[in-house]
Length: 234
Ligand SMILES: NC(=O)c1ccc[n+]([C@@H]2O[C@H](COP(=O)([O-])OP(=O)(O)OC[C@H]3O[C@@H](n4cnc5c(N)ncnc54)[C@H](OP(=O)(O)O)[C@@H]3O)[C@@H](O)[C@H]2O)c1
Image 1 (spheres, helix red, strand yellow):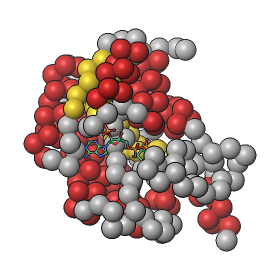
Image 2 (tube, protein in one colour; image 1 turned 120 degrees about the horizontal axis):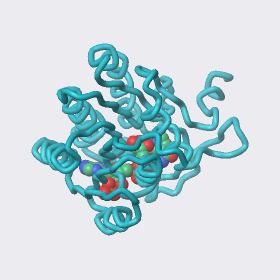
Image 3 (spheres, helix red, strand yellow; image 1 turned 45 degrees about the vertical axis):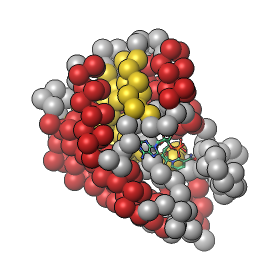
C-alpha cells in the first residue's frame, strides 16, 4: 500500500479494540506513527502496539475526566512531536438510563471537542476525524436517544470548526452504521440497503481517506451500507 501518511503522526482514542484498532492499523499501514489511547483494554493496546510497524505509544486515560484528557493529549503530543491526525473514536454506546448522562456526554462530546481544540492550537497543519453515527441524520435512535443526541451534537460542531480552523486544520466525520454489535448486548443492528453490513475495516478505510485527502473539510461520510437512505424511503 502507498505510504500516503508517511511522516504523519496520529492519536486514536479508544484505539485498542474493534473499530479503533482497525483505524490504528489503517493509519499505520499508510505510514503514520500512531499513538493508541485506551482506557480499560491495556492488553489489547499493548499487543496492537507490538503489531504496528512504525512504533507506537500506548496511552491510558479516562476521557470522562478533564485532567486525564489533558494528560492523554500532552503525552501523545510530546511523544509524537505533534498530533497531525486526531481520530476521536472512543465513545460510550449505551441504552438510555444505563449510564450517567453527564459521563456519556463527557466522553462522547466534551472529550472529542477538547482534544480537537488542542489540535487547533498547534501551529502546524492538522486533521480531526470524529467518529459519529449514521443516526446523526436526525433519526431517533430508539432506546439510545442520549447516545444519538451526543453524536448529533458532535456532528453539529463540525462545520463551524472546519470554517474556524481552516486553512490549518481540517475537520471531518465518519458516520458508521451497524458495523459491530455492542459486545454486551449482542443485539441485531438493523437492516442495511446493501448486501452486507459495513465492516470495521470499511469504517477505518473512510477515516484514512479523510486523513489523506487534503482537499476535504467539513464533510460527514456515511459508512452504513446505505441504512440512512432506507430511513428516508419510509
Ligand atoms: N460499532 C458500530 O457498529 C458503530 C456504529 C455506529 C457508530 N459507531 C461509532 O464508532 C466508534 C467506534 O465504535 P466501536 O463499537 O468500536 O466502539 P466501542 O467498542 O463501543 O468503544 C470504543 C472504545 O471507547 C473507549 N472508551 C469508552 N469509554 C471511555 C472512557 N470513559 N475513557 C476512555 N475511553 C473510553 C473504550 O476503550 P477501552 O476498551 O480501552 O476501555 C472502547 O474500547 C464509536 O465512536 C461509536 O459510537 C460504531
